Length: 198
Image 1 (cartoon, rainbow, N blue to C red):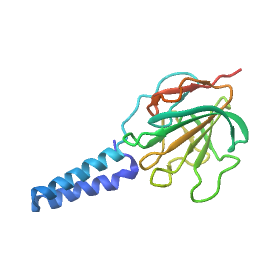
Image 2 (image 1 turned 45 degrees about the vertical axis):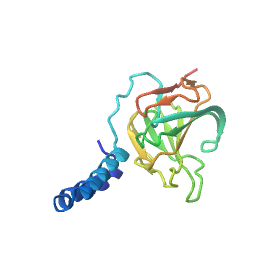
Image 3 (image 1 turned 180 degrees about the vertical axis):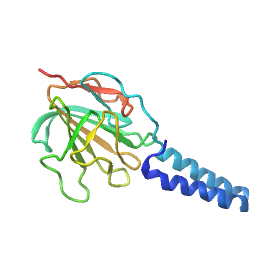
Image 4 (image 1 turned 90 degrees about the vertical axis):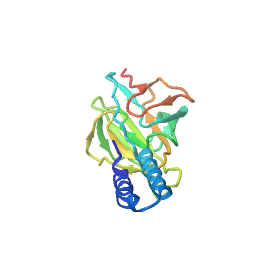
């Protein structure tokens, strides 16, 4: 499957190959083929099997866990556990919802063109999770697929960051974290934490 941002580039490169390749030499045809392959690799978006684990928080993206620490959540103004991951440069650049719930607008949203994009997700058990997509390696803005007020499923595609970025996840302080810095995770399929209800 191809991410929605990549449908035009992939189709365009394929059509270019179909139209131009028959009338060009082998070197040009190979360049067009390589361009098509690169587009498919950049924008690939495979389906993932979502684990059936109660109160689980799944990884929002493919990448490596860079830090796990208790931090102040500036979006909801609370203490939280912050799990940060760096998306793989050679991985899938789609982001996925870590929990099932309703998308709400955070109380505090940073201003400015370079500000990250935060989404407040509230589960049916009233657990508050904030997903923050930072700007990509080329300083590109993250694309968010969900609107405030919409309901989203766990592991559902919710955004895209060109060539990857740092993803921050603010979780309730009572959460049980199942990953450590250095761990590699896959978006939508690997459990990184569990929401604990006391």
